[in-house]
Amino acid sequence: MCFCRILICVVFVIFPVFSQLKVSEVMRNPIGSETEAPGGRSHEYIEVVNLGDDAMNLVGMKIFDGVVFDEIIEIPRGTISQGLSGVRELKSGQIGLILDRDIFPIYDLYPLNIPDSVAIFTINHASICGGLSADDGFIILNGNDTIAKCLTGVENDKIKCVANGNEPDGYSVVPTSLLQKNISWKTELASAGIIRNFDNGILREYEISRKGDKFECKILYRNFGKNAFIKNNKLDKSGEIILTENLASSVIFEWNIDGKTIFDTISTANLFVKENSVVITEVDSRATIEWIELYWTDECFSLENWHLLIGGSVVNLPKIDCPKGKILVLGEKNIQTQIENAVIVPNWRKINNYNDTIYLVAPFGVVDSIAWTSEIFAGTSDKSTIQRKNPKKSGFDKDNIFAGKATPEAVLAAIENKKFEIELSSKKFTPNGDGILDSLVITAKKPKNGNVKIEIYEMSGNLVKTFESATQIRFVWDGKTEHGRIAEVGPIFIIGTFDDKNSKFSDRKNAVLWR
Image (cartoon, rainbow, N blue to C red; front, side):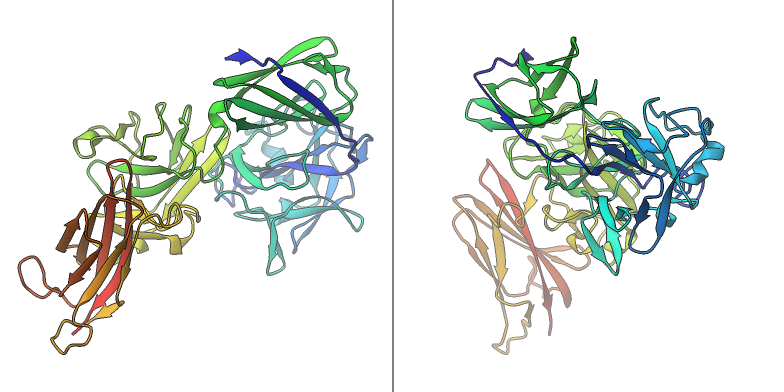
């Protein structure tokens, strides 16, 4: 760790009009059943913050999801033991929570641990928008004016607010920024009434980018009437600061607010951690020794204090360094007897063979996820694994998930702009000697020198033919197995693998052998 030494410090003062409410968190998947209390019927909530200069009366405003209108109402003072009840206004810089009405009779048994300074409101119906679920979004209306929203699109008149994958139980969706106009939504562990780096009257947001051997640190802030300094620079009401400093594992920002010193420690280990920066590309859920394959889609960085959520259970990961080829297998005890370079995860939780959801979670929230049901295994062998066609597409997209022959430590060619792929001369071929489509030509497109291996499987999962060459890129198959018999009629699966000792990629194509 190091304290920032300012090499360049430029203060850009911005005077935005902070007149609107901001949605700072939406809990639509609380722990528990979706239709029961405690759970989805009682513990959903919307968190808002007033970034304006003046107090704002929330009572009478409407929440609209495209179908249902709810009216925000005041709750009598003393209704619950936490937060501020009996209020109508949200003061400048104050956080508010709009709760399901069904939570109040059971709140003391299942509290949200709300800070005392947070204003509490509810709605005129039992549950917000009849119950928030999956990708539900909404707008908050003051008369006819939209003043706040969780919205990324509209589908069949229903407002949608899509984050990076469905949230696990107990996780919320939050905006990527409260101080910028162009935002997206991400998934984080729920924290009702608490906003990261918002205390002592100042909201701080950090963006860090690498500039050669230094970091450029951009700080956006909103100052709610406090006498505040950072690095001896007095802060206006709002603005932006640029600091340039030497590389370090973390950067500590020192603030002085009304004579009180506070510190924000920003880990540079998470500099490149974005949605889908590390993805789950393969899962072997049916093996005696289970494993999960990860792939770094862009920059290499270490995973520290990360965990998996498997079937709702937390599986803590050891510190993991990005391997040279950016592909890594994680598995339970004894996995290294099967996959030499795999990382053992001590507290492994058994994966459900045919129906499960796995989340990859960084300290700040969900980075990637994958889900499957038993339908994926129809017509496949017992040794098939769950695989992702394109890691840049959702792991919840059924069309992006398939079951096939295990390819640990190899990544499908859809990654990295098709660095390696195989092409087939035809999707159908008939090796019957009539001179028409009697053979299948498989052409490998590879980026550089390296070994190409082509494996052909029948639908039953049996390997029937293998080609391998360090120089050849064109392979012709006559439909016969290694033993000289004609392969079974029906679907066939062709897996091509490229390996240059530094990186390994694979591609998969389907065809039909016919008579």
